[in-house]
Length: 317
Image (cartoon, rainbow, N blue to C red; front, side, top):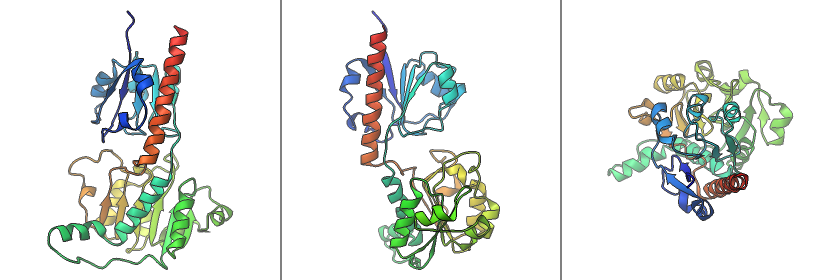
């Protein structure tokens, strides 16, 4: 009797994976194991994944570098959600004969969360809500967004949609990124500013860049020093685009007034991390894509890719 194909579903924090799509065609031909915890230790991760032929990963929650893939001789397929996954070593996967599939998705949920964080940070909503629950009333004075300057860092798929909402709030929208032109900005309803003006002009800075060599650490001590002491930073893109130590220093020193953060250098954010409870900071646990519609697309397409792989594998036997 042949060894059954085994599928591991990783980081299903909410225990929703099996309910978000019809897994029956896969379960009929393979053993599916769902893990709702996260393993950061590489040795423990390798031990967990060693018995599996297929691994289903949710975005970049569990990185799969060469050092992991090369120690998983049984692994033959990775089903990854989203149209790309920078935390998978694609070159190593190709060399090792591991097929990697991707899925469709939706950016609307990230746009919406960006604005949830902007509003929550501007109006101090988390602290005010907590105060009501604790029997207190009106801790501070929020800030109105109309007439303020929204700075959009990056105008790819998400930035233009964020910019349009900013305009609807009556904000002046400006934009910058390394390759941006005045024409690109104007097409998104924004005014282009060169880098040396951009950071010092904005009242709310929202980050919408892909993480890469040019964007890593792009917002650091010099950028925070240039910003207004009343400015807010919102990041729903990737944590390392912002120099985390410089951000903490800027918040502590009052170089900026606050931050709304959905992404961090290390995720999940370690216990005791200073960003967990800093005044003026609203944090969410990388929820940008964690919504019903993108999840259904992710799991639908991921299950279909696994089903196709199983069919091809059986045909090749």
